[in-house]
Length: 141
Image 1 (cartoon, one colour):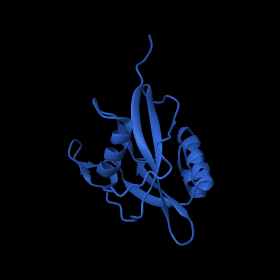
Image 2: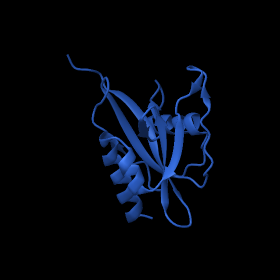
Image 3: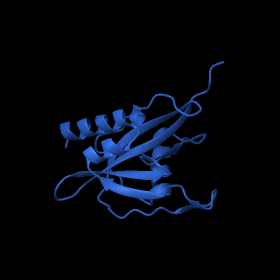
């Protein structure tokens, strides 16, 4: 039996400060990842990615200046695949609002981190998307 793929869409968010590029990571339990969530029926993956970022972080000032190319992870969990886009923001303030469905924030913590720190925190399945984002940003700063 073939499992149906569940698509999750998210954004690798970058922010430039005076010194270096920083990436936004969110922690749920002991797992660090980028903001993402399930693509709802009738919603495009890009729309879902933007919605999830705003729901999970309150960020809505996103510039998709590198276009809408994406990278996907291999299947994990119960056939879930995560698709990541790249966006830049000028906002540094992030909130982790309460998700009304679960009665608490979806994430326990957030951090703006360097590429090197992000590589050390994210799971191996997310690492390839982070490496792609770093290369993309370096080629078209």
